[in-house]
Image 1 (spheres, one colour):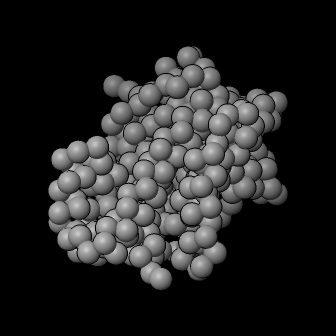
Image 2 (cartoon, one colour):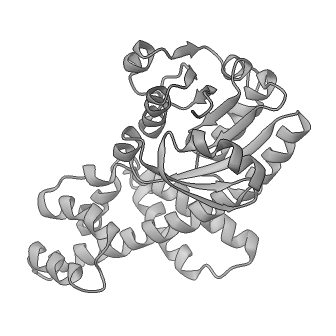
Length: 293
C-alpha cells in the first residue's frame, strides 16, 4: 500500500477543491487554509479535512504542502509573508506548487526553501475543474529524479497523466509553453469565428470546415459549445487569467531571448479585452466580444 501523507493545501478554488477531494478519497489526511477564495468546503470537512486560519498553521503539521493559487505574486506571498508557509515549514517537508508561475521566481523560491530545510517541486496542471474533481489532472513536474520518484504515488492520487519535465522550474516552463499554444489557438479561433459571422457564414458550416481540416482539436471542441449555443462552460477559465498566463509566457520568452512576435500580438489582444472590463468573462466569450463593433 502507498504511503499515507499529511497534506496541507493553500488554495481550494475551482482546481484546488478537486485536488483536495481526490486526496481525501485516496486516504490522505488534509488540512487547508480558510480563505474567501475557496469553493464551498463542507464536503471536505465532512470527509475529515481540517481548516486552518494561517498558512503557517497549514505547514506546521504537513509533510507536503500543495499550493494552488493564482500566480507568482500569490505564491511568493503565501510562502514568505508574515504567517506564511515558511514560518511553519517542517525540516524535510516538500512544497508542491501547482500554480502557473514565472520560472525565474520558481527557481529563486526553491533556493529559499532549501536554505530553510525544505524541498520544492513545481507540478503545473493542465485540464479543467471537471478533471480536477475526477482526480484526472495532467501534471507537468519540475523536480529532482529522487523527489519525483518519492512523491509520484501522492501525485497519482489526483492526476491521470504525469510528465517529469526536468529539474525545478521545468514544470512551470512547460506549462507556459502549453498555455501559450492553447490560448494562442483560442485567440486565433475566436477571431476567425467573429470574422466568419461578419461574413454571413453559418456557425455550423464554419465548425464543420475547421473540424474536418486544420482547425480541429481540443481548443475547437472547448469553444464549440459557445459558438453553437452560447455556453461558455466548456472552458471555465477567465479572460483575466488568460492575460496573466500569456503575460507570464511573454516574460519567460523575454528572459530567454526567444522570438516573441506572435506572443506580443496575442498579449495585445487579451490586454485590450481586459482593459475593456471583460476580465471576469470566460475565455470562450472572446468569440462574441471580438464580434462587437
